[in-house]
Image (cartoon, rainbow, N blue to C red; front, side, top):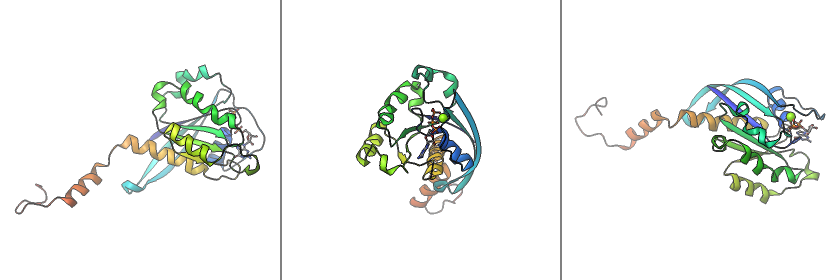
Length: 200
Ligand SMILES: Nc1nc2c(ncn2[C@@H]2O[C@H](COP(=O)(O)OP(=O)(O)OP(=O)(O)O)[C@@H](O)[C@H]2O)c(=O)[nH]1
Ligand SMILES: [Mg+2]
């Protein structure tokens, strides 16, 4: 199954570093601003616990530059076919949290209702933290989305962030597991006497 994910959020919050940590298990201190958008690919096998099956995902990651004029976000090209968003802010800069609203508001209407995770990155910089736990909970409520604290530097929660989102997308695409529901229904119904299992 193909999955397209876009990363958005202010400049220098760590979008490119998160992608590089996930894809190459690599981190660089050097800041090189992304120009426009950069597209990455990765094929993974995702275990879908509820369905007890493994699925191959052909993942495309769109790493979009942070100091893009927000009006450019309405540009169809970035979001064409997107199925989920990682909206990234920086735990050491409160302004990057405050601008999450603007990023989400600037995305096309259809995109705003897709599965989304709020990523609070740079969790390793414990002495420079500008947002507290309450802010994190509030973020989740405001955007009705899971919030994940990550560090591209240490790798903390990075793989989880990408793969939890991928799982939400896949579950949404696959819809209810009808086999599972059927099994459950057979389990709870009393089978009337004289009727074969097949006919039932
Ligand atoms: N300590 C620490 N530094 C980080 C982390 N993630 C990124 N950085 C640093 O933050 C700076 C910006 O990282 P990038 O990944 O280039 O940021 P970006 O969001 O892609 O920025 P734009 O391309 O301008 O939108 C770099 O100097 C990184 O080394 C992290 O988790 N911890
Ligand atoms: Mg970048």
